Image (cartoon, rainbow, N blue to C red; front, side, top):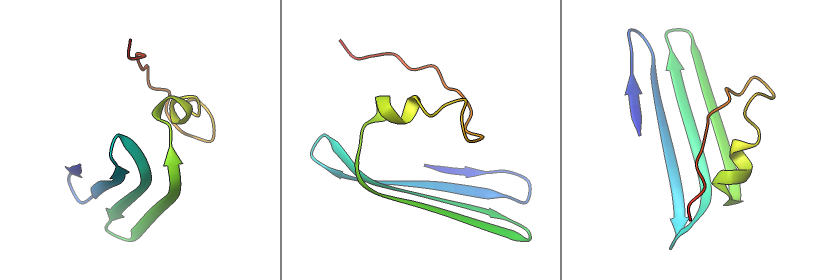
Length: 66
């Protein structure tokens, strides 16, 4: 995923093994700032969603798959 704005860009990269997400990288670029987040290991989207509202992470409503 690639997001571009006025003077800033952000990209999200996912690594998967079949249906499992096994890694995540986020790169955000502003005129005088670069942020890189790298998460290694199996990621459960539902567990990540539980971090919403904590550590400055916005809360996002998610729906469980049946």
